Picture 1 (tube, rainbow over the protein chains, first blue to last red):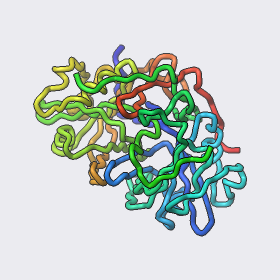
Picture 2 (picture 1 turned 45 degrees about the horizontal axis):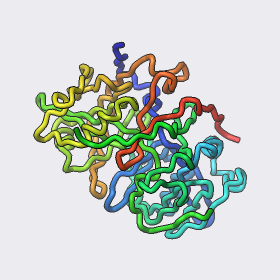
Picture 3 (picture 1 turned 180 degrees about the vertical axis):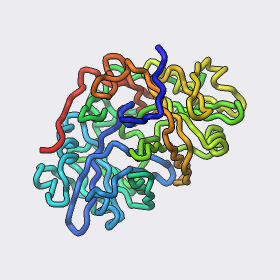
Length: 188
Length: 188
């Protein structure tokens, strides 16, 4: 079957799965959280993480002011958390209180660590750069929180125990088929 | 169960699934392909895509010279393709010939479009910026290729027909549980 070829990018960001995360930030005790799907590791040494955020987001303002942010990886069972924080603005509402989001103490920053996350990174902002209608926020990971039982001896996610949350766009979520996990050796 | 909290980031990029893509580039008929897991959409308008690449990669050199790159989303059944292109260098080898990778004609650039991809983007380089040990490459998506049958009416991936490829680190791959697909409405 031939592919469709178009210069109309349309809903281009829905062509592939994205990992749904909760981005957190805090300024003088004022916490906020937002859902994000546009993010990635970008360097091993130093360990850097990037996330693309609209400058209109309240969370962006908090990050710009505090120079810190948190990346929280939440399980499929908590998809409603991503959908809820993504659907209201933190400008007038304390989302943590309103949505009953429990947090844990950060180690090196003041960013809220989401208790339901199976892993979370505390990041110190090192750069932010506008690209199109979003700002690319880059932080150095200064502390890692993770559930020990969520990881297999190979240091990858233990899919029998954790269902990672994937976002497909248009409010659709799914998780991994744990039985599909396969080791595929590099090279020829 | 309390989380482990550490400043040792270790294998931090293995805490979550990543979408495995094939990045392609071409200079004067010299094509190359590499596997990448650190990439993301970063802007709607204009449609921008970013990918983090080590400057030591031959593909990086081709992108820097040609100012173009391709992002190819391949299915789980082709995990071996990601593993193979990820395991050899294109400096001495024509990976397309050696691995029998079939390509399709690009529309707006000269980047190879991988025939096995269910979706692919042709990108024109607009920026590249070093962050740590990688370079953050940003391109504007100027053409989109996709298999019509791979997408559902909601314009999201049709999981009955396409198994997206996820990478977990340490040469482990998996795909989505199609039965887990869930609509979760935004807001409270």
